[in-house]
Image (cartoon, rainbow, N blue to C red; front, top):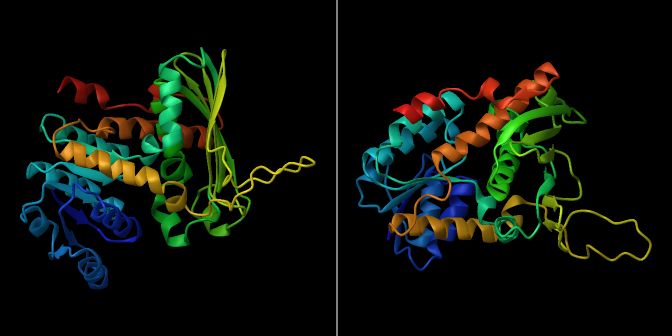
Length: 341
């Protein structure tokens, strides 16, 4: 198949390399405002370079990968859907939930598959955890812990447009909690603080945050995030049930140092970059997209799925601002009219 890539920044270039290595992908068509980026893709992968998204969609592509800036996501998704081309788009769908709802209304009856990139759904550990829950290996869940700790804060320019830690970082935890447990969030309580990087506080954001999510069956999920984890990139998931407990990310590259006498675990070099921690997941994710393009499977993470994670982020942002529990029905709006058409 012939796959188009819109945007060749860090993640777009990474996706280009991954797609070029998949047996199902015969050729790439790319576009990016930075000429050096497209030239590199042409040289490395034999990609065809075009000068605009419109030209790319007219180039006979079977599917399109959107890795452009967030502000461009809605218009690019809609252009691809209008052209009848299946879409993979990095999260988020749009900068705001309201814009995401507009996209959902436009694509819901189009018959064109849109796959939003929440890569943890393709991490082997997370997949195994979901299977364990579905097989009732853990019994009734009572506690879930999801952790994302970055080794260093993003640049100041990124923070200024990120939407805040809950919308930018924690959404990955929110999505994986929903996906692995199969439950919805009923209410949240969030707290946060600033431990460094003054420009984050100046932007009205926090650099360290925690949220307690009460799921609709009473399970408690604890989400922990920080922009400061000097030891490395730490992503883990724990699920505790009445019959058993399991963990994702509990392996030798875990960026945590034990001070127990005689302990040798973890013994590996800690993960220090998200592309290192999730390289296999990204490959599995794009392989799944080729199955979507081939018409063999529906989107494994729809626009509606992505919006649900965004609602949780909105509830956490409100909880942090007002220092109180927030029910999901306080922030979740617009879906009824979408469902009713």
